[in-house]
Image (cartoon, rainbow, N blue to C red; front, side, top):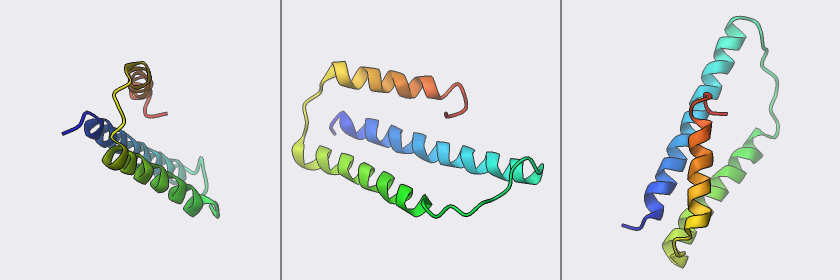
Length: 89
């Protein structure tokens, strides 16, 4: 198994966790009447962009087999690690 697969899986788990936390906080805010729900007409487009980006990442790993470039991967992992302690963004 390539080193890219665990990175992509971790990234997907992180994004799903961020979505969970966001929805949970929204529900709490609506419940406490500190926020209200509004129409989000651009949300489907945002979802499509994120799905396309993840699909592109997987296709790149499967077809292009990019080499390991430590000076790119290590800072990206560090950035992701910095986001976890503060509640995912």
